[in-house]
Length: 332
Ligand SMILES: Nc1ncnc2c1ncn2[C@@H]1O[C@H](COP(=O)(O)OP(=O)(O)OP(=O)(O)O)[C@@H](O)[C@H]1O
Ligand SMILES: [Mg+2]
Image (cartoon, rainbow, N blue to C red; front, top):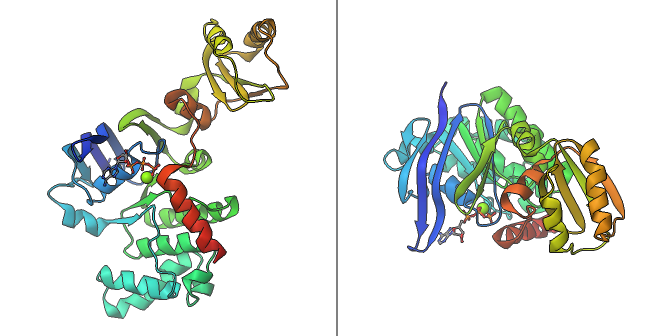
């Protein structure tokens, strides 16, 4: 088994104040698709920047394909590609010209450049628009163009920071379709940060959740969902704001594993809904909680996130700027 990533007790401190990473451990086998999840400011981008040798860790060890990020950065950079959270192509030149610039930066010999660029554009479904200005592209095409730049060197691992932020669901699925096809052909390891739980659920072999620079949980989507319980009973109250006393009383019930609130919804994790539901319902009624709807679901990654982080994953902070910028580009 070859390890693509091997991280031991990595910390990162900024300006002697912020502990962006506070003792991260992670091993990832080569060829896997890995999703890093966490709320704004959790440390996702910082970890990715350490693994791509842009920052040095304050302490701890990090290796990429056995190479040390502190001492062997040059060798690592020849094996990896990185698509940042921010925009990484020029909009006033064509897609082809963007790839040409990157091909030169990567040192791809002149005689091979044209073919390599055409191949990368084809892999990302951009052949027809190769010579159009990037500012005429849709948001999804811009992102695929950025990924095509990163694929020019056929990396052993590709790091994608929020690969589909701001894209609509159909554009997101096209990005993933092309990425997965590329991965199948070249066995590339994929390491991505995301705010979209459905993408982590659908595409990642392994998911790690971090918060405040620490690992909260790590496993397959099925393991994470299983770890929180068997079923979720969802009570809709019709309006936001559920009394703390009600939440406390439900949390104390022996049939209840966990309780969280998502706007007007009270989400209660139980092992067995059939036995738990009548008792919970009695309790809620006796406390006069309005109920407009009751539904049942299997735990989702959102429930995992709610349990471990306490809030639902929202796009905010610096990320909303990125999303906003991408939407602006899409609108031209
Ligand atoms: N260059 C820097 N200088 C100082 N502080 C920084 C720097 N980069 C990140 N931080 C801080 O480190 C913490 C982690 O930031 P990071 O960007 O890694 O989070 P993130 O999980 O990627 O968040 P987001 O979901 O918003 O992209 C935050 O508190 C952030 O303000
Ligand atoms: Mg980030």
